[in-house]
Length: 341
Ligand code: SAM
Ligand code: SF4
Image 1 (cartoon, rainbow, N blue to C red):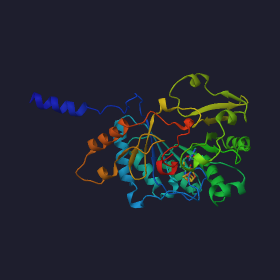
Image 2: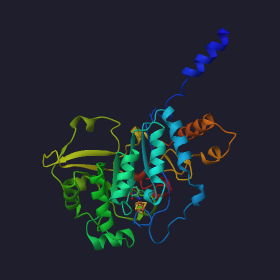
Image 3: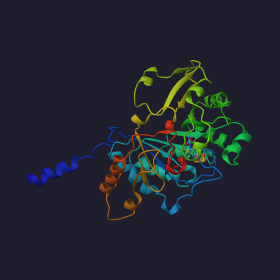
Image 4: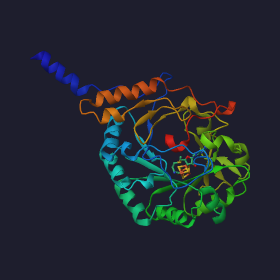
């Protein structure tokens, strides 16, 4: 009897160890791609020539499968989920996905989107489902340039989407990938627009992933010269593990915060706290590498259990590379669209 009781107590209190890789990097953040499809053709991600084929849609994880994976991840210490793609708003069931993941105990949820399909009704529904933060890609404010950079899409629905985010009370950030000869003269104008809506603009060095390796990167130091900056949190700059974006204040004004992501020139891999899951359920421990493990066969096999999922996640972590080597000219193996950038 005592033995049985002890076993029972053990089962009740046992928790799987928190997610840590072989370099003691503690994982707290998962980026989940919900589709590898996109209607845009950003030159660094999905160019006209040389684009990679998409996965069959039947292989995309369903809302229920995603919720199960996230539930397992919460037992391993994951607290933040970002949905991305491809273009996540192409999934008509995105609101259901967010509801399902919220229901398993994740409060901090975000999406990264091009916002072309972000109507005010959809923004309100996403907020009601539990979405707290949205990052919107915005490489230019010039309507003609926008058409060229997106592969023919108009800018107006995107600008309406950005305003819908503000109106729905969701926190707004924008992502601008800065490419020489393309948009490096527009940075202040983009920042002023985003600040006028109460958002935070972020400027990103183009990474040599997919077609990004053929473009001309503008280094973070040069991006920062477009502004008069002081660190938002001076102490954060000297600490490890603050994440990829450094945040700054322009002209000493607290309502003019901006982020700079030196994705290529500054290697923040030693403090990487994230893993990625692709739309078809591959666990990808590193942005720059195609290595990983597969959850979909386990999720669709009724004889497997959550422990099998945990083992597959740990196996992926065991092969998490030290980091990228972009500054040595070694490109990422997959485009962001396939990985969930
Ligand atoms: N379609 C959505 C969007 O564009 O926001 C989400 C997916 S997209 C792959 C996520 C982010 O990756 C976008 O902000 C995009 O600008 C960025 N991105 C894609 N390829 C990149 C590259 N080669 N270098 C830097 N950023 C890149
Ligand atoms: Fe589509 Fe986003 Fe890639 Fe642009 S960056 S092509 S919007 S997935």
